[in-house]
Image (cartoon, rainbow, N blue to C red; front, side, top):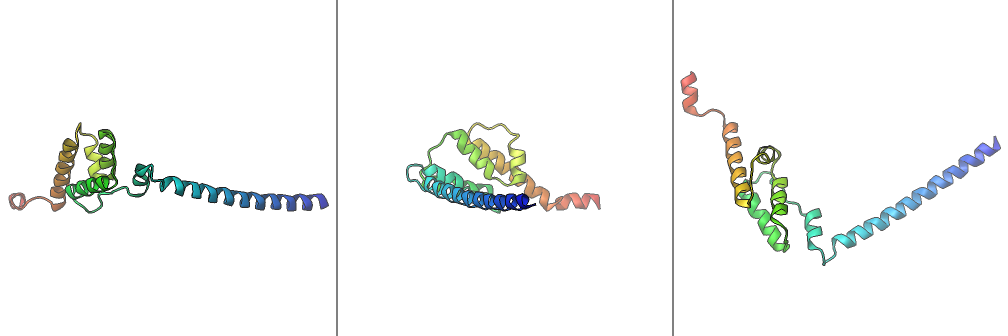
Amino acid sequence: MMTMAVCKVTMLKLLMLKGVVWVTVLAVVLVISVVVVLSPSEPNVFLNNKTMVWQGVMTVDAYYMEMEMLMQRARVRESLEMTLQRFLNGLRFNIKGIVRHHKYATMNELLHHAREVESQLAEEAEGPCYRHRALHA
Protein backbone atom coordinates (compact mmCIF):
# COMPACT_ATOMS: atom_id res chain seq x y z
CA MET A 1 0.00 0.00 0.00
CA MET A 2 2.76 2.38 0.87
CA THR A 3 4.49 1.87 -2.43
CA MET A 4 1.29 2.71 -4.35
CA ALA A 5 0.92 5.99 -2.47
CA VAL A 6 4.55 6.88 -3.16
CA CYS A 7 4.09 5.90 -6.79
CA LYS A 8 0.97 8.10 -7.10
CA VAL A 9 2.74 11.07 -5.52
CA THR A 10 5.70 10.57 -7.83
CA MET A 11 3.39 10.38 -10.85
CA LEU A 12 1.62 13.56 -9.77
CA LYS A 13 4.97 15.32 -9.40
CA LEU A 14 5.99 14.14 -12.87
CA LEU A 15 2.69 15.28 -14.37
CA MET A 16 3.06 18.68 -12.73
CA LEU A 17 6.63 18.87 -13.98
CA LYS A 18 5.50 17.93 -17.48
CA GLY A 19 2.85 20.64 -17.28
CA VAL A 20 5.46 23.23 -16.38
CA VAL A 21 7.72 21.99 -19.16
CA TRP A 22 4.86 22.15 -21.68
CA VAL A 23 3.92 25.65 -20.58
CA THR A 24 7.55 26.70 -20.96
CA VAL A 25 7.81 25.07 -24.39
CA LEU A 26 4.55 26.71 -25.46
CA ALA A 27 5.77 30.13 -24.29
CA VAL A 28 9.03 29.69 -26.21
CA VAL A 29 7.15 28.62 -29.35
CA LEU A 30 4.85 31.65 -29.07
CA VAL A 31 7.81 34.01 -28.71
CA ILE A 32 9.57 32.42 -31.68
CA SER A 33 6.42 32.58 -33.82
CA VAL A 34 5.91 36.26 -32.97
CA VAL A 35 9.51 37.01 -33.93
CA VAL A 36 9.10 35.10 -37.21
CA VAL A 37 5.78 36.77 -38.06
CA LEU A 38 7.03 40.26 -37.30
CA SER A 39 10.34 39.77 -39.07
CA PRO A 40 10.85 42.66 -41.54
CA SER A 41 12.65 40.40 -44.00
CA GLU A 42 9.44 38.43 -44.70
CA PRO A 43 6.47 40.78 -45.17
CA ASN A 44 4.46 38.07 -46.95
CA VAL A 45 4.41 35.87 -43.84
CA PHE A 46 2.61 38.60 -41.92
CA LEU A 47 0.19 39.23 -44.79
CA ASN A 48 -0.63 35.54 -45.25
CA ASN A 49 -1.21 34.81 -41.58
CA LYS A 50 -2.78 37.97 -40.21
CA THR A 51 -4.46 40.02 -42.92
CA MET A 52 -6.32 37.55 -45.08
CA VAL A 53 -9.06 39.51 -46.81
CA TRP A 54 -12.56 38.03 -46.94
CA GLN A 55 -15.38 39.25 -49.15
CA GLY A 56 -17.99 39.26 -46.42
CA VAL A 57 -20.82 41.63 -47.39
CA MET A 58 -18.75 43.50 -49.99
CA THR A 59 -19.45 43.16 -53.69
CA VAL A 60 -16.97 41.20 -55.77
CA ASP A 61 -15.56 44.44 -57.21
CA ALA A 62 -15.16 46.07 -53.78
CA TYR A 63 -13.49 42.91 -52.45
CA TYR A 64 -11.08 42.84 -55.41
CA MET A 65 -10.18 46.52 -54.94
CA GLU A 66 -9.61 45.99 -51.20
CA MET A 67 -7.39 42.97 -51.84
CA GLU A 68 -5.35 44.81 -54.49
CA MET A 69 -4.89 47.84 -52.23
CA LEU A 70 -3.72 45.72 -49.29
CA MET A 71 -1.33 43.74 -51.47
CA GLN A 72 0.18 46.95 -52.87
CA ARG A 73 0.51 48.42 -49.39
CA ALA A 74 2.28 45.30 -48.16
CA ARG A 75 4.41 45.21 -51.33
CA VAL A 76 3.47 41.61 -52.02
CA ARG A 77 5.11 40.06 -55.03
CA GLU A 78 3.72 36.64 -55.80
CA SER A 79 2.91 34.50 -58.80
CA LEU A 80 -0.34 34.91 -60.69
CA GLU A 81 -1.50 31.49 -59.47
CA MET A 82 -1.02 32.53 -55.82
CA THR A 83 -2.94 35.77 -56.39
CA LEU A 84 -5.77 33.89 -58.09
CA GLN A 85 -5.93 31.45 -55.17
CA ARG A 86 -5.85 34.29 -52.65
CA PHE A 87 -8.78 35.97 -54.41
CA LEU A 88 -10.75 32.74 -54.80
CA ASN A 89 -10.25 31.68 -51.18
CA GLY A 90 -11.54 35.02 -49.91
CA LEU A 91 -14.80 34.89 -51.88
CA ARG A 92 -18.07 34.07 -50.16
CA PHE A 93 -18.74 30.34 -49.97
CA ASN A 94 -21.68 30.29 -52.39
CA ILE A 95 -19.76 32.29 -55.02
CA LYS A 96 -16.54 30.34 -54.53
CA GLY A 97 -18.35 27.01 -54.93
CA ILE A 98 -19.56 27.94 -58.40
CA VAL A 99 -16.56 29.95 -59.65
CA ARG A 100 -13.99 27.26 -58.93
CA HIS A 101 -15.66 25.02 -61.54
CA HIS A 102 -15.03 27.60 -64.29
CA LYS A 103 -11.82 27.80 -66.28
CA TYR A 104 -9.73 30.92 -65.85
CA ALA A 105 -6.14 31.84 -66.63
CA THR A 106 -6.04 35.53 -65.69
CA MET A 107 -7.38 37.68 -62.91
CA ASN A 108 -9.75 39.38 -65.35
CA GLU A 109 -11.33 36.04 -66.28
CA LEU A 110 -11.70 35.04 -62.63
CA LEU A 111 -13.16 38.43 -61.77
CA HIS A 112 -15.59 38.17 -64.71
CA HIS A 113 -16.82 34.74 -63.56
CA ALA A 114 -17.20 35.96 -59.97
CA ARG A 115 -19.22 38.99 -61.12
CA GLU A 116 -21.51 36.78 -63.22
CA VAL A 117 -22.13 34.39 -60.34
CA GLU A 118 -22.76 37.28 -57.97
CA SER A 119 -25.36 38.80 -60.30
CA GLN A 120 -27.03 35.41 -60.88
CA LEU A 121 -27.28 34.79 -57.14
CA ALA A 122 -28.70 38.29 -56.62
CA GLU A 123 -31.35 37.64 -59.29
CA GLU A 124 -32.27 34.32 -57.68
CA ALA A 125 -32.58 36.01 -54.29
CA GLU A 126 -35.02 38.59 -55.67
CA GLY A 127 -37.32 35.85 -56.89
CA PRO A 128 -39.15 35.70 -60.19
CA CYS A 129 -39.63 39.00 -61.95
CA TYR A 130 -43.00 40.77 -62.09
CA ARG A 131 -43.92 39.75 -65.64
CA HIS A 132 -43.41 36.05 -64.81
CA ARG A 133 -45.71 36.39 -61.79
CA ALA A 134 -48.35 38.04 -63.99
CA LEU A 135 -48.23 35.12 -66.44
CA HIS A 136 -48.73 32.56 -63.68
CA ALA A 137 -51.60 34.42 -61.98
